[in-house]
Length: 302
Image (cartoon, rainbow, N blue to C red; front, side, top):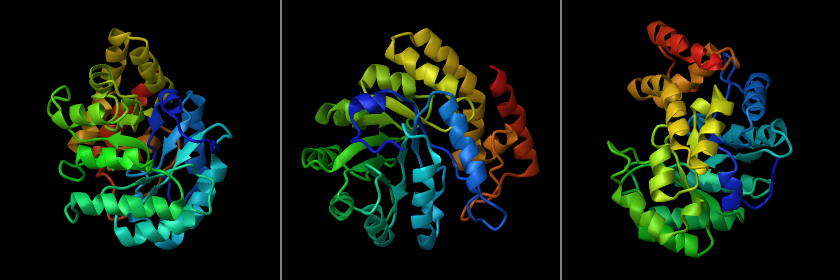
């Protein structure tokens, strides 16, 4: 596992995969299947993996957290960067910080809590988390009003932020006053587009941010990485071609649920048997699973 300090150059080198975790029928970790998925992602040239929403870190047992970190630190290749998550509630986050402090992970992402927060309170929780871990955190901005751009800047200026995952969904990603302000206030080299391939071209080209996270990368890591490289090279026509390849699967994720669809898409593609999804989520219906399978399997030969 790569334990070096994360730089903008490191973020720019790879798509950031956000894979699910495979589970047995009793919801315990299926380490063998999860490792199969990691190796599949690495085989496509992708070597940054972020375990957050798609891995359902929102709903893991507190008693499972330490063992999960131990597994992740050993499952990936020596040059692969692994970023786990903590939270979203303050109490569990701070207990998890004490465990993270004892590990070699260079950072961890704080999962965003919706509805029961204030801007000042979020900033305070991030400060406390970083003080407890001794590591800068990944700030995940998913909801309007969660944390203001000026507040993020103050955290960055104080050295508390490793990088920023920006994932507020817009009807038109080119019209985004928040992202415009944020990318003017902080180094856009530490901002990553957090909504997959679909808005990535606009986010990187028009706002100057650095890379993008992806769930579809779990199916075709080589193709997703090729899209990042095409954007970096200014070959937007090629990037757009790849974006369209992923669109049908992303449409299913948007129409049903991004986390639930990806969890079963990996299995339907024959990459790894992901098993049941951890509650509070539930699996797809038989009809939904069939539709996802019919969409995802052709991706393997594109």
